[in-house]
Amino acid sequence: MQKIIGVLFLIVILAFGCTVFEREEKQSTIPDPNQSIEDINENIYQPPKPVYENVMNNTIRYDEQPSAELEIYFINVGMGDSILLKKGNFDVLIDAGGQGEKVINFLEEKKVDDLELVIATKYTQTSVSDMRRVLQKYKVEQYWDNGLIDKENIYYDEIYEILESKNIPVKHPISGERIVLNGISISVLNPQEKRYLETNPTLNSITLYIVDRNFSLYLSDVEAGVQNTILSNYPNIKSNIMKVPNHGASTVSVGGDARVELFHLIDKVKPEYAIISVGQTELEIPNPTVLEAFRLRGAKTLRTDLNGTISIITDGYEYEILSSNSQNKK
Image (tube, rainbow, N blue to C red):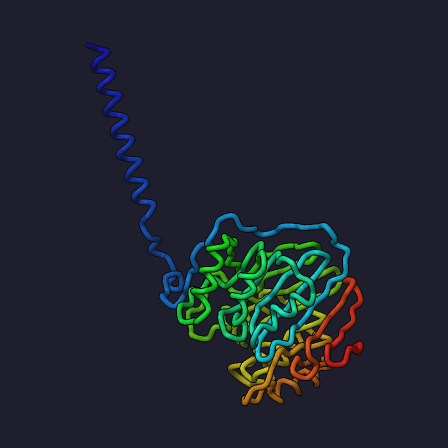
């Protein structure tokens, strides 16, 4: 009898314990009453998880030829962006915009056989118009974008169909992440963890700071407000070469005095050369105000519409610049 009572008592204790545990579990899902309204603001977008889980996380190193020269090509694709990084056998393509098949033709000219990393900084025609052909033609180890679903972009669905059919790992990097690829440090400065849901795609554009030993390159298309956030988060950014945002349009400095905003950016980065990827357009691009700002700050400007494809070759300490229209050192 005592054994039976003991068993019943044990059953009651276990049942009561499970009930308490279940209550605790349910209580843990109750929202924090002190949660800020910003955390649940409908204008803030949290990107989905990457398409595939087997992606590089934080830092990865491929060190076959870390001492090789770094080659950087601002490809002349007309009104668009496309930048190829080559170091030894490792190739990184940043954007594939522009007209026709200029990106594909250039990759073939440089005898690229596969791409370790492909980055779409934003989904606009000037950034991804030729991306489908690149993904179809080449083996791609990993693909980055800003994580925003863009059903209105005519290329978005087709790009993702190719990514899924070829099982290409996809990553949505955020500010603070970094990889090291054959000695090239690629740091992500934008987008922020919570994306802006405004219609302007440049607000969430991927901004990169690329370093190889003592050489550095700053690539950003974001506008003044987000640019100031980046410069505040990373106050020590200095760069030999800077890509001029948005093809040198005046929108590089939306809000306030345009020249003051642009001077602030140039004074922080202190580029020796500013590269403008631009083609024929009826718009006033690059804007004279933008060109004047770089001139007054002592940064030399080069333009793909005038200079053709711009090549930068560096051993990590010294560098030379060539343009396809002249093949002369700059």
